[in-house]
Image (tube, rainbow, N blue to C red; front, side, top):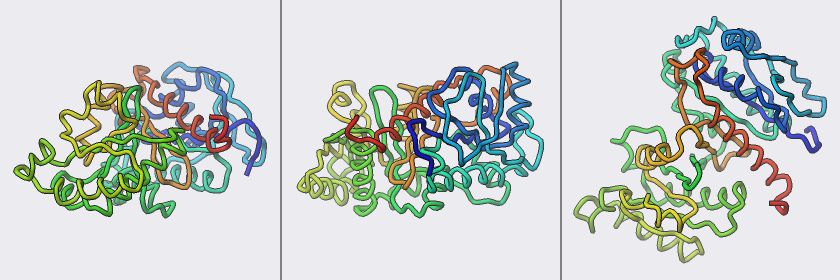
Length: 336
């Protein structure tokens, strides 16, 4: 483990044919207060920098040296070779294993202390599956790789944080996954993450119902009566500050959000459309419950923008800043 005041942060650009490499290069046009280490093919960065007409100075990672801040236009790299040329807008399944290798190297480095945190760019789930590799998303992959049994996806932007009970599953399968055990585990992880990672000493959490109108007293579904209400009552008795279950169409009002630190949605498209409407391009995806720090952008690969220079690095910058803030809080909780 490298000690010292300067943090070393791993950065995986994600799908090489997508917007991720562009955003990494745009991000480093400003000096950084940490040492950023891109885990990717250096030739990809050189080619994309030339296409974007952006200055770039690469240096190879020396994991045994003390981290040093990154100057403008400078990027440290841990080389990971692509198996096929990366063409903007045209993802190739031959590179899927390489994309996952960058994640594996980042995970290993976070676990052994080489990196203080991991910031991930967007991957193309479909292309990875087309390569014959089962992959449902970063969150699930990181959980399996680290042996973490109860991770939670939390997306945050100014004025709103949304966590999810279920993530990348079909809507037809959501109801059977909304069990007392799962919801209790998610709430426990969310509560602990808000305290440890975000520094909220007494988190207030608002819980959405699963059904329209939170079940309308059982007329529109029984999950609220059978599962959510008894569970939330039990957890309140244990000291959690919980509101709900409430109809999702009234949870996201200004007055309601002013009284909560996070909203727990039952499924992906219940909470995230609102969050992305409020802060798309500025929001951050934080994975709670891992034995490492991981943040990510709030958007996809944007294949149509790759190589054009029209990408917005705002979410990547926000993800990096969140990773820095969490890493510093972990190092010195009393300073936050």
